[in-house]
Every structure is written in structure tokens, then in C-alpha cells.
Image (cartoon, rainbow, N blue to C red; front, side, top):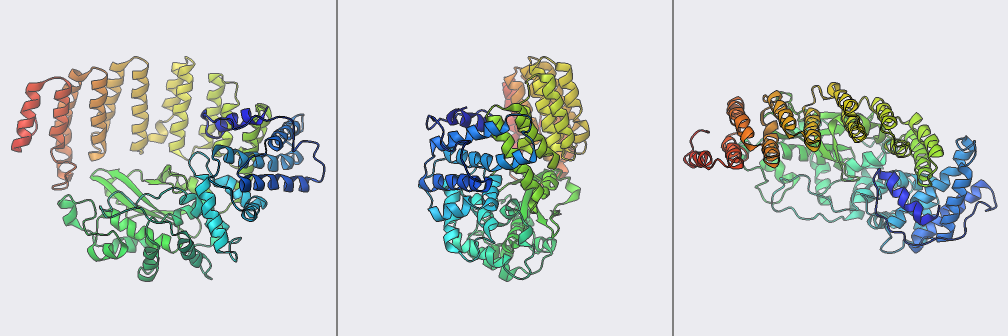
Length: 601
């Protein structure tokens, strides 16, 4: 396979979706060929030098890369493809291919300095750490390398020791940082990177004799939950100087709760510039308490996460903080009585959403782990072999990766994509994957939904229903997953030409969750949208009007006075239902009552 074609297949493997990569060149002949003489150590050094030159010159050596692919194909052939010796030969070749693939996908604005490039790519530990954490779909290669090179020049004394910190900063700040949350008020603008000062602050935390969490045990992913501080560096200094102690529950509660703001419906910060000092002086609501404690932890080098979630009385924000052993205290400021089943947060390394139920899985990667690095290296070999359309050999290395880390996502991707495509064969793989992720209900539900989709596409509707039925154990006591599963079923029924059954399924879900307070308000709106799209608006009125009357009585006592989000919520939903059905008489009656402040229908 020539390099240009290979790059297309690589893109498909890495994220299990086809990508429209444009081949930048047509390759011929061989350069770095399988006949390259010298010891294995010398060949590894040559490969790393090849990558370093490519990044310094911002140019890929076409012939050399074709030779690398040829050598991989030759080494992978035969019956000894999975031996330890072959693995040791394939690993640097695969890493070279993945590194060059990043550069092909995202050509640099300018080449990096050769000295810096060799420092990064010619050291196995540093280069592998970069390959493990850089995401070519979500990260910005030019910006990340620009930050790394800036910090490399800035701190020649500690750059080797603090490279994981540098890399975390590069992968978090390679894209503009969003505010701490969406209620910081109107005076929040873009935060300057100020990367050298920001690095110096964290370096000073980790270079002390007794850092709060040992730096040499923290992974890059954990450090991402430290350095994502979208505030001026002066705020971090203020936190260290003024917020004492390590009891973050007490720090959270030290901010006086501003009941008046909630009662008046002022959820956005009303006191000028959003700062820690201002929060301390004026008090705040839950999101301000959580932000205050979050920055108190991160400013000291302690990984912390701000979670938001929906409970029976509305939205809430709370905090998770990492303990010394790598576990998380994930319920700081969380109130059990309101049933906040799931907290959601942003993963700062790549901008994807995570939730607090996945923290045990996150913990597997937050403390430095040689097993995780080893499985990543094996998965990269599997990805490259799959890209070369060598499915048997790719599966050997995917299985090796899964022997070490049963939940390695890219290893599972390789196994799925290199299967024979038969729905029943794929279904068996989904069964194996669901067992591997048994401790993580979110993943199991997602896996079963994909399994059901594959089976339906193959005409196996009963097997698809059976796959979805296996999610019941995971959705028990997880309203968010129950919702996901229920709405996926509604969508499937509608897509299969069964709108009435889909509506009935939606109504059953709403009835089953009528005691969930404000959690299902959005779902009622979705129901009205769905019935309008499927021309079932008259049936919707018959169901939703009595449902809203009963529902309103259950939650009216839990409403926050003057909360603008919930004023006349019942009348607004009834009005939409009548308007959807073309019942103008009933719609006008609702509008009059909204104007006069009367009851619902």
C-alpha cells in the first residue's frame, strides 16, 4: 500500500469513522527500506530522526515513509508476527507512522526548531507520551507544539522533569479556553494564555518538597484537570495566598449562599468582574461556590473537576477533587436530597464531555501507569496494521493491548473494523466489549445501542430488542441512562415506520418518570416536537394536557419563587400543544390566563 492510500485508512481506524483526508503526495520507490543496515537501535534512532526532521522542516519525506510502510508489512508477514521480537521491531515503526500521520493531517504553520524537535521526538518517553495524548481530531498541532517549544526554551533546567506538565499545558491551551461556567456575568472576556507565568506558577507548586499530590505520579490527563484555569494567573496566586486548608467541603461552604439572587432570578454574576475575591466578598450561588473551591484546588496543583447536573429542584453545581491515592472525592457540595444522579463536565484535554460515573475509568489513567503506556503502544501497532489492511495481524496486537487494558477504546475499534462485517459476528464482539466495560454503565448502554443498530441493519430485529433489553440492569437507578435508552427506542421505532408505537413508548417513559421533578421538563418539549413532526398532535393534546396538570401539582411546591426559567412553564407547554394541534380557541384561552395570571387550562 502506498503512503497516500494508507493515510486515508489510518484516519478511518483511529476514530471508527471515515475521514476525507486529501493525499498530499504520491509516493514511489523506497527510501527507508527494509534493507536498511545497522543495529535495531540504530534503525530506531534513524526513525526518530526522520520524524524530528519532518517536524522541523514541516515537510514529509515521501520515499522514506513508503519505505517504513514496506518494512512494517514485511515484518508483519509470516507466522511470527506477534512475537516479542517482532513487537519490539514494529513499535518504533508504528510510532513513526502515527507521528507523521499527525503532521499530514495538520501541517504546521511553520516548522519547529531542530533542537526542540529532536528533544521531543528522539526521546522515547517524551515522544510516546505525546503520541498517547495528542488527538489529531480534537487538538491543534501547531498551537500545541508552539506552547511546548515556548516552555522548552523558557525552562532548560526543569524541562525534562516537568515535561508532563508542559504537555498538559500545551494540550489544554492549544484552543481558546471557555469560561469557568456560563454564569460568570457580562464582564468575562478571553483569558490570555500568559503561558510562561502560568507554567511558573504550577512548576513552583510541584517543585516544592511536599507537593499536595506527588507530581511524579500524575499523568498528563490528571494534570489537565490542574492547568485548565481560564482566569488570570494573578487569580491563582490569590488563591494560594488567601484560601487556606485542604478541606474543600469547608472551602465550598465558606462562600455564603445568596438566596436573594435565586429568589430574584439573577443566576448570572451581578457584581462586576468575576473574581475569587469578589466571590468571597459577595457570596454566591452553587456554581460560584464550586468555582471558588475548584480554583483553590487547581491553584495548588490538585486535580479538580466542576460538575453540573439536574436534580428534582433544578440545576446544581458541585466539585470533585483528587485524593493522594488517585481516587476522587466526587460529592463535595452535592446534595443527596435533590437526587443529582449524574454530573457532567468538560475534559480539558480534548473538549469532550465526561460524567462523574466515569471517574473510576478516568482514575485508571490519572496516575502514571506503565501498563497503560504499554497497551497504548500495542494499540498503535494494531492501528497501523489495520491501516495497511492486515486484519489478522492487527487483531493480534489489538488482543495484546486488551490483555493489558480491557477497556482500551482504540484496540476495540480495530477489532470492530477488521471483523468480517457479518452482523452476528459483530454482535459477538459487542457482547465481549460490554463484558469488558461491565463496571461502566454509560459505556455498556452505548455499546448495546450500537449492537442493536448493527443487528437491525442486518434484519435481526428480535436480536436487536434482546440487546437493548440487556441495558435494564445498567439503567436501574440511573435516570439519565434510562432516558437515553428510552429516547433511542423512540427514535428507532420512528425510523422503522412505527410512529404510533414510538409515541406510546415516549408516553410510557414520561409516565414512568412523572415524579422526577424538573428533570423531565425538556423531555415534555421533545415530546411535543416529536408528535408535531409525526403528525400526532391531536393524540398529544389528549395525553399531555392531563399529564401536565398532574405533574404541575407534584412539583409546584419545589419551585423557586420568581425563577424566570419556570414562570408559567405549565401554561407555555399547554399553549404549544394546542397550537401544534391547530386548536386556536384553546390556545387563546391559555394566552388570556397567562396574561391575567390565572391557572392553567
